[in-house]
Amino acid sequence: MTARVDDFHCLESRLRLTGVLRAVTALRIGAAGGDLDGVDLPVIKDAAGVPFCPGAGLKGVLRSTVEALLRGAESRPAGLWACDPLEDTDGPHRSCGHHERGTRSSVQLDEHCAVCRLFGSHLVASHVRFCDAPMRLSEHDRKLNRIPVEVRDGVSIDRDLRRARGARKFDFEVVSPGAEFALEIFVENPQPWLMGLVVMGFDQLAEGFAALGGFTSRGLGRVSFTWSSIVRVTAGALLRGDPPVTTTGDAVAAQMRAWRDALAVKYRAAA
Image 1 (tube, rainbow, N blue to C red):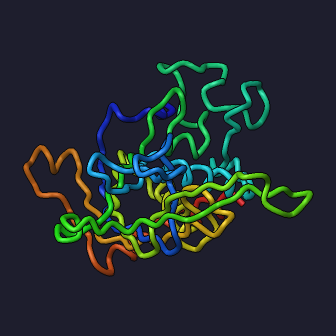
Image 2 (image 1 turned 180 degrees about the horizontal axis):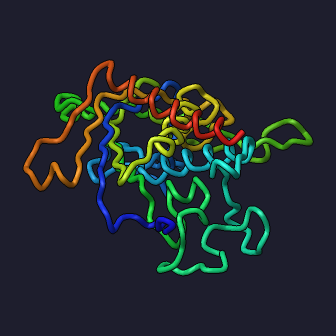
Image 3 (image 1 turned 45 degrees about the horizontal axis):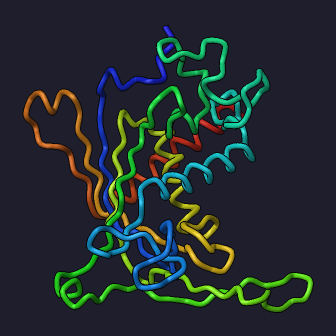
């Protein structure tokens, strides 16, 4: 029997990945509306006025990065393809969920693309949960309100005249280079080759081929990652009362390589 795509009804294992996201260049994840300090384009902040990196933003850039890579190196026999979310016809890249049996109770695993199997579609939940990443600040810096945020100037340019257009000057906030955020990601029932896609997305960000936030064409949004631990729990361990298995140090990098290798093996096997 074909496995269901929404296999959350059966817990095999769960992962928690923790690490640090570091802004290599200035980082801008904008908030709606003007700021109380009079900045035209503020960055998003929590109730205490400290910037954070929304989990939704990180998930979005990872998903779009993985989608683009899979479309460029598609392998249908390996299940490595990405649907078109705007396509609801019977074409080869139709949106996942618009199949002949497109209901929650009958959608099958092999009917969803790799991206929707990993990050979810309108019919199934995501296997990966991205938490909001708070900025790492010491209590001393918080008390002194030493928050690494800068205000920069911008201006609208007339492309024909090659000069400033009228009085369209504005200012915007950015998080300063070097700022760090506490990263935490949870994965339900992880499969090694799908974890390879997650790692590949983070690799593309770390290597600068993808960027996070806004104004990326101006050089903003370059980030790096340092992974500190991988915690794995299984249903049996939870029922027995066993502690979770925690991977740290060099073993974290080894696990990341194993996930990349699993993805490569799946892709090559169908070539």
